[in-house]
Image (cartoon, rainbow, N blue to C red; front, side):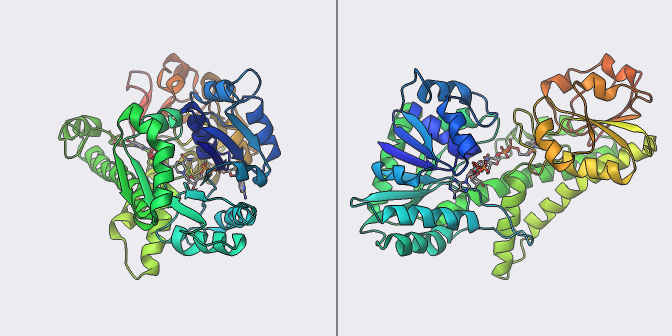
Length: 434
Ligand SMILES: NC(=O)c1ccc[n+]([C@@H]2O[C@H](COP(=O)([O-])OP(=O)(O)OC[C@H]3O[C@@H](n4cnc5c(N)ncnc54)[C@H](O)[C@@H]3O)[C@@H](O)[C@H]2O)c1
Ligand SMILES: O=c1ccn([C@@H]2O[C@H](COP(=O)(O)OP(=O)(O)O[C@H]3O[C@H](CO)[C@@H](O)[C@H](O)[C@H]3O)[C@@H](O)[C@H]2O)c(=O)[nH]1
């Protein structure tokens, strides 16, 4: 098939490259010329394992030429279906901000006015239930002067990939959810995913757009709440002198609980869990329902960085002292710092008047946009040298393998937010939940 993907971010670039790998011809549209140029040279605009290889294979010179990036929406006219992968950030009150989606839908609708054949538009972004039907479709109809179900179809296909393992997750999914309110759009979506389903036998869930939208929020809410529950249990374990990781390993053997997402510590960050739980809570409240469980999950999550800092305070007063912050990305394997737990940790250190030496293998540049005035060290050892405390925020492999580097600290106080290193003689060690 000939496909267009609007948005060349973490999701858009990944799925564009993966669709090309499945044999489709893909045009990836973004407003950012620099991003477009990078993709067209066969390189990745973001850090994502496996993505450079796919872009080299399908874009740029000596490639299959099945993938090309552009800033020109008109190029989607030669495609059968368009996937919208635009950001859906949050407003100050936590509710979803659909303005970028609306702008994209306007540009898409204006372009579709010029198309004489059927076209299917698929919303890939995470949007609250009703957005596709009540907000995006009317814009497409208005701008194209066409009717959904007659001239074009609309579908909703939520994405479950994780950053850091995005290519693998997309090409080997646990499930594929196809939400559509008309049969032709559903048939087109099936045709897009048939090569993947044949290859992986992934279960396909067929539903309407509203339910597809909710499945995405339920998925993320459940996982975020699972991490908060194990953090709550972990905090209790620590107070009672029990190792939360031993407990998690044991309860994870129960199939009804499952072993994944039971790593207690600093909690969840990233571009999805915080904003998606906020958006669905805000949507619930707009309908006069108080989402007690998700409110509590958020509260537990907000408390974990404060607990980390309070453990540090027990051992050392860091005013005017050097503190090493090890790890800045919201998790290993990505350069993304959106809503990273490192942000409240650094803010807490700034309030205490500490001199901050931060280290991350790839996310320092992105964190520099949030905190231009802190020191970014070239290595974990350089960050630790002369520090009065070390706070472990992200469990990158080069952080979990640290050992004698802690010996160069002024006072070897190590507060571990991710169970990254082992207790040993010669360091004062506090785990967040163990
Ligand atoms: N990041 C993830 O792991 C992930 C996973 C699943 C779902 N999602 C959802 O997917 C959506 C996209 O997320 P993301 O992380 O890929 O976003 P992103 O911020 O990484 O990328 C968005 C891209 O859209 C481009 N853009 C903005 N306005 C545009 C316009 N009018 N026309 C064309 N391009 C435009 C930007 O330049 C940027 O390159 C969000 O709804 C998110 O919740 C994200
Ligand atoms: O046991 C665990 C598992 C995760 N986390 C934290 O939870 C956050 C999110 O992790 P993860 O889910 O691996 O990363 P994301 O890339 O944000 O992926 C989530 O958000 C995406 C965007 O919606 C979805 O597509 C994915 O299915 C969903 O897992 C990170 O800060 C992790 O450190 C823990 O603290 N403990």
